[in-house]
Length: 420
Ligand SMILES: [Zn+2]
Image 1 (cartoon, helix red, strand yellow):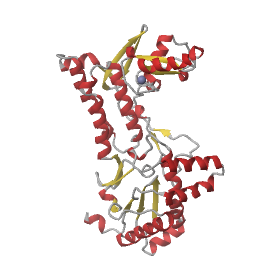
Image 2 (tube, rainbow, N blue to C red):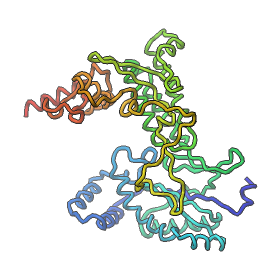
Image 3 (tube, rainbow, N blue to C red):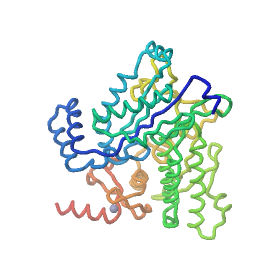
Image 4 (cartoon, protein in one colour):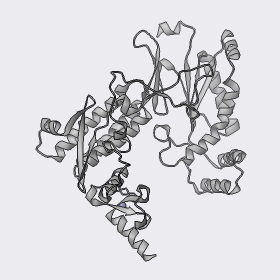
């Protein structure tokens, strides 16, 4: 890109990669850092025991999906405590006031900014490539002398932002689609392929015994969770690529479930246009009530996209410390979008708090909330194969005191309770 390189602006990114390696030396160091904040000896002892027991063995710096903790929260938490030292170092070095930053620029030097989550970090800079290379060496020295960590030489790349970087499941690239430079934030190719694979796995021939309602709501739950993470990306098309995949896979699944059914007949009978979008629908009947589910689609309303405040005098506001809610973006065509309550917990199920629920409806809601899976062993089943367990006996019918169990697990729990 010769045009870009003739300007005096450089946008290089150091993509930090710390080698996954954490031993006793690090355990001691970590504990000393934790002790600065936590005085409670019992908690310190507990964390020490966790470390010794190998609870976090090979996990502290193990990559989790999309850069967010999936199962255990303690590993990224401890990684954050450990690498907070790196934040402090970077802040002292690079968080300069406007005057100092300007001075750097006039002297031909670049300014720097680090963004980090757990052990994933990037350093962005407008310095020259030679300068950025030297900074990478400084980073490497600090990590090794102060934190006994090794920055991987070959994996820690220096990339120009026009070539795009991947960070925490996002692809960030500076592009010029219509004569103007903009930064695009998109799901990584890997992230999109992974969700498609999961959709495929959920809609194989082996799952055709499942009720249509359960099938549709669990596909919705999966896609909504994924879309929630990516809702602020630049292109809705990236999310639509995934929901189009759902459309296609669900059609295939229905054709296998209803052998001999014609494609157009299935589409005629099982889709509806809701808020200008054609969606799959499915119903479930139980205890005299019928519930309908709709395919979730990434309209602005359904994504609940908010507009983030623009960069102001004091820089960007911290996302966790805002006091005022971000403002919702206007709907482009003025359409209102589906009623929000329609999409609260499970798509298509309206909450009716005013009237007490019949037991059969309550049980169905518990199963929907638990995604029709046994809360002990994870077995997924049709509604008739699952039971609702009263955790506090028959004294409480509150949703939080009820859980979905398979017959096997329910039997073993009730026999334990009667034995004790
Ligand atoms: Zn079970």
